[in-house]
Image (cartoon, rainbow, N blue to C red; front, top):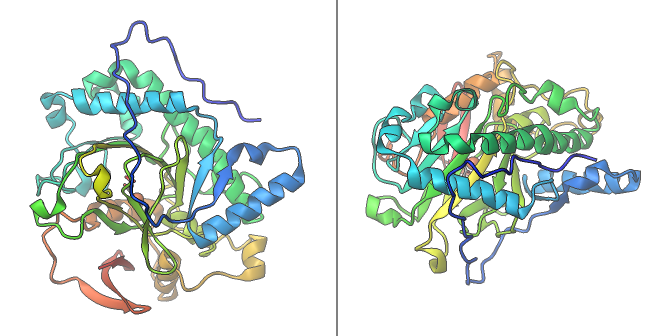
Length: 396
Ligand SMILES: O=C(O)CCC(=O)C(=O)O
Ligand SMILES: [Fe+2]
């Protein structure tokens, strides 16, 4: 049985942190995505029939949706809300000097540091009302790399991050390895990075201020365009301000419903590639919330798990599932990497892929690029860009 999260709880020498109060859920009746719920504690069940059923449900979820709710992963609602309170404290107390000193440089291929609410490039762009602080390995290694106001809380942020990467994600990868019918630690040992609390991934504290996208010349209420994540798994904590949407197999965007305390997990490109398309790296985006929440601030904590940087991903040919059923040729990153490999050109390494994805991804604050090629996929208009020889399609 996995140990539950057990963070430092002596706050006596720390500044008082105002409690984060979850905003009210939307009052609208929305057409939500229907996602499976996985109870992570069941992966340790002594009953093989229970584990078998869990693996079957996980298989269906990641094949059909690429997204799932994860519950019972070992963090209580109070512990989670303490982390949200710290994230809120960071954004409300970061000094102007720290914003400058820790300013991010996404065009270098990593998001580390402070994102001001002016677009997604290193230099200031159009306002977008999105502030972030991104903790990579260096931010965990050196206090000088994080805002001074969170220094007293880094013990808690670090313990939380370690729990997410070493316990939650490791158990999740065990479940996904079982879906591939491979040894329990196959994905952990061969694909996931493990060095320090966050490995080669990052932890994000994001604050979305209420924002009318049309004020900035941005259309369709979009705060982040549709994209896939580049890594192994993304652990998004479900939040009441309902903005996350996923692109269904029926080509319809649907919101993901708030589920208090749950993790919303999605599969990144790396696992789509390793699984030969059996796992789906599903497109998702951040939309404005429904009208009843239009004046709310949206605080979000996300743990992006990163794969080993020097690997060039290949399907796990030794997987009995792949041997039996082959690969899903028609799908996303798997399809495009396969097409590149067939030309004899080496596919990008995981590190190259994540760095180009960060540096080059298109955002609503970018100036419209007239040169983007429009293509139609199953009758739907998409925009095509090519990164390191790999075609990436985004819904137009
Ligand atoms: O904030 C969210 O819900 C999702 C953000 C996201 O998709 C990303 O940063 O990759
Ligand atoms: Fe994402």
